[in-house]
Length: 82
Image (tube, rainbow, N blue to C red):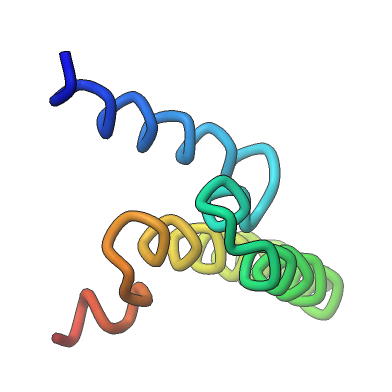
């Protein structure tokens, strides 16, 4: 049973990211990082509103970074490169 708890927790984090950018970090108790991810996602969507594809990609990248940091402790770029 204990092996399924991280899976369920990670699933909840993914659902949270769909609803609110930075939710994974907030669920981990990293309020500052979660709020920063949220603000960056909102800012990117606002700045790139004229180009919906870029706005969507930026929002996905911010959400993926938040999830990556909460699950592995590293940023998305850190997981890709290193």
